Length: 338
Image 1 (cartoon, rainbow, N blue to C red):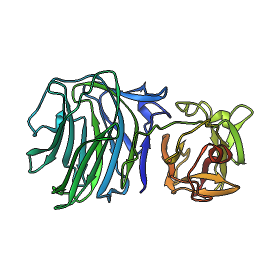
Image 2: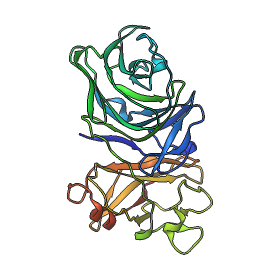
Image 3: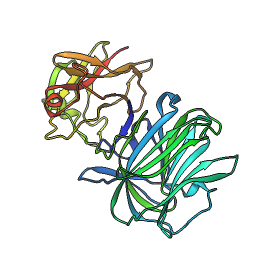
């Protein structure tokens, strides 16, 4: 089981969402999170996509907290995925599965593509949902022509569970999820994608640096501590920053998490850009128990982006779960690779 992506909207605003999350259209606003955190609001016409890295997963699970402000009073025939709160795309950009919440009959409906313009219900269930309450929805898809599976949960309770399906319409893999307003207004938060199974109702918390670490090779442009140049939410870009131009330069920082429940994984996220012509690469790093562990090397761009990130599900020092003690003893940052 591998966590492919996570998004809690704790790091920025709608202009700097981090790959693999991308704004599609509308005027999505960051705020309105649950449990005291940040989230995002989708109004009529808003949507955004969550891309599946590497595009090779035939089993994918998505979880997302959902909070309805308004909800349309439709109960569509199974042929209009524009009504879906969540649409699933295959590797050939076809909408193959959709999840719909229909307020006029109180039914949650899951549709499956069966032809070029046709869909069918693969499962429906009455579910009493109300406005202005948070629900946690999870959808699992297995893509196969005979043993496909679609399972949908709300608040960890199974609503739809259909097996032995032909879920292989055209493309062999799931390429992205699209979360949509469908003419309504609702808030979203705490999104995860996994390649195997449900994680349950999860909360994604964000932490910013509050101390300098063992590596301080980068140069700050102002202030007396490096971490004070990289601790803003959202990032202030060129207002205050650290910079370096030498291969092998590293900077790491400490964080304070406070009490935590079970930690499913962490994402180290750096907002970075290159400042001259030519190729530059960097990678996220974790320093645990005095040893540096590297994330994937990525290319940098002229504009600020969050490409320099990596997910560690467990502490790489001992392969055991993260907890408050481990996280507050570790350091997090980045390294220039080329």
